[in-house]
Image (cartoon, one colour):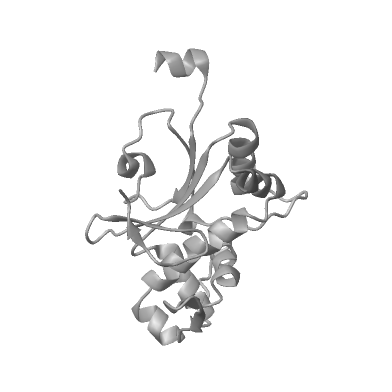
Length: 194
């Protein structure tokens, strides 16, 4: 810890994960102090790039990690049984939570998901709301893909990805089994994290 105080932080990875108390990114990734720059919010969402006078906590953290800390990797880590995604599905079905912030926040993912998932043949197929309510993991995974897509709306981040100096990753943690899965950007297909 002494070197982290004297030399400052130099994490290689920005981890954007859910605020859920069951999903700790440092524990799940086995990271030591100073290895992850972490942003936690409801449903591990990344809003699209929108500079301006509004308050942008997630965007500010992304900017600091990419432009100042110069991280090499950004991981969006979602998880099974996400309350934020449950709120999103309810909102899509016309049952918005009577809250000041949560419903509008989770709708960030609604635009990104468009209630579509990969059909396994390189295309998209629409999924009925009733099926999503029974299989929320489809939305959890699509929300990860949506947040990865939203990252690319940040021009200075996209420039680094295109230059090959920054890599984007999607992870999904299965609370039922303890397995950690990854999804390539733009996809909802999951593979075990090795």
